[in-house]
Length: 367
Image (cartoon, rainbow, N blue to C red; front, side, top):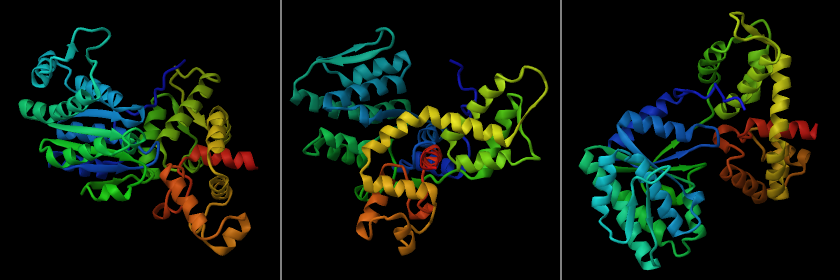
């Protein structure tokens, strides 16, 4: 399998958001970064933390099926964030728990292990969560704790004790900033006084600033006398993840047709953009089929309508009648749910489908 040479080595667009988040982290602020899949939320946090001189602890709460698993993920990320031998020894000294073992020479990587009762697990949770602040004071640095899919902990935190404790810690630790990664802001998040940074789709200018040099580096160039570049941007709609996937697909197609080690450039034509977009969604079709099967029929209907007939006003009576959509609260409920899932942008961005490849697949499927 050929690696993807189009994965950006720098931040694509998002300069305003980068400055904003860096300032929040530097000033001990906590924030919510909201955006759909492919909008660059994780990359943005990484670059902003680097700019603010902060160590990053990352936990994907979707991987935590119970409290002990959450602590395992936290411990793993602590050892990654503080990876120097002297820092890991300091972690061990600060934790100072005879029931917890630091295996700092374990292969393939250091680890922290324990086997504790439920009561002791809660105590370890509190102690582990103090370590970022203590390490930040010892190193005179900042720490950013990035929590993906934070609300997933409710699936096992039935009484809300872990969530409530985490929320309190968000307010208390002075050298630690919390960054929650979500698709859209939820009402409870506003109660935490979080700074909210929402990521819109990239503009075509922002996308092309990365795209054209990246392609030229591999001997590729859009034929400016054709609509190839325009077609590409229409298909991608500002989604960097889909842009990377389609660019790689075009490059691989060119590798089968020409020796790209030569100094000659390969001119990309519109038919090549279209052909490779078709091939890309054929690869993604099983994933999209599974997704559609999991959605309620009312949401599928809304998605299909927006795919074949985009509109900024899906609530118009004519649009509802044309596509036989549910009226009133049912339609808005479907739109809200699709927005929560990251499949549709809300009113602010015109109720368009958020994943361009999904929209293209739906149009082909219904065509």
